[in-house]
Image (cartoon, rainbow, N blue to C red; front, side):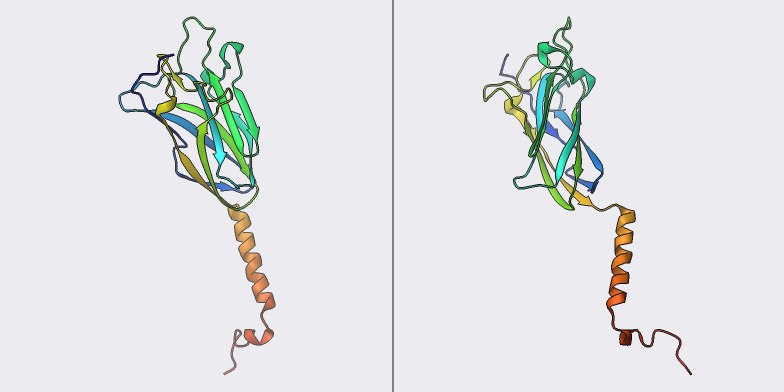
Length: 195
């Protein structure tokens, strides 16, 4: 592979902030945006989703990739997917046994399906999904140039909330609890007054 090619790319979530509902699945799409004037063209990729250190309360429940990227080199169908606490990753290629080999001309790389069990803010970031060591070439474009040293990865902040019907029930329950704990004397004067 050639290394000298002035072609930058950004890999990110599209939005710097997202909202999720506790217990429901949030699908985070990860896309690649090439430098202005460059053509979308890719042979291989590998992207990992990482929480900031000490972030707990969420898990990955699935990873989807476009069919054109759902191959594992010469091994054929099925990109390499990894799901574990603290690291979710996918790595694949276009179909390398084809003749000619057709590069991927889309921008969507993967969709990570996550579920959150606790309320709060979850800072997430992207990075290379490297499985073969520090000399591995991960992102290779359709002309055979390695993009790894020219890629910038994005971050996002997921805020997890309770569902709206549950929130309304929670607020009503809290209000009733406050009223129930008030002493009876504080309720005087709330009814009709005698004239």
